[in-house]
Amino acid sequence: MATALPPSRATLAEFGIGSAHQDEILNLPGGRGQTWRAGDTVLRPSAGDGETVWKAAVLAGLPHSVGFRTSRPIPSASGEWTVDEWEAWQWLPGAADETRVSDVLDAGAAFHHAVRGLDRPEFLDQADDPWARSDRIAWEEEEAPANPTLHRLIAAFRPVSAQPQIIHGDLLGNVMFAQGQPPAIIDWAPYWRPVAFADAIVLADAACWHGLDPAEMIRLAEARNVGRQLLVRALVFRIATFELLGHWVDRMQARHAPAIEAALV
Image 1 (tube, rainbow, N blue to C red):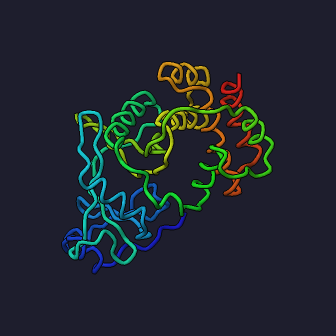
Image 2 (tube, rainbow, N blue to C red):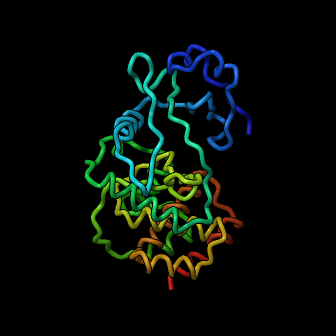
């Protein structure tokens, strides 16, 4: 994937990045080639929308614990969170490890406990990207596309009574581990769903993409009170996203099949 251009020197300066670090700016892996590090600051493209402002305001003051930490947003010299379509965040050391499923679930539990009192943000009502639409499909708020696998899973839907709150819907690859530090949660993907749905997405992602045995997916789900109904909805969420993005092909079906069969037993 081609690397996008870095932020301008004027933008870097607006976020308090001096000339020495401006000369050493590094393109980071991930982030579709659009994320950069300058000293202890990470910069990434920003829509400057309601979600951007809301997340920055929450994470600027969210208390951390021994169970998790987050990157803090960095305001510009003028106090804004976005400058020239860029946003800046504190750089944290560490690396994701998608095989540490239980540790990711533990970090997610600590994070979700910390944000449990937040009100539902208004920007969720305007979200219309494939991920937001797939979330609504998984909760029967939007009609699913014509995909036989999706409709087989949807036929297994049953009511869910768990109360919703704000969650992180993409935890598995966005929890970073560093020796001697609490896990760092990054790239918050906010949804208003039961916490166990976030756990189900972690388990489904691990089983479909990172080698978790489907039987272990079920064992972990049972141990953490994640019902099969939420696993089914997590699979619908992911499969619908691939379908809407035009990425659902035969090899994707094969990759998801073992987890689907385990969830539907």
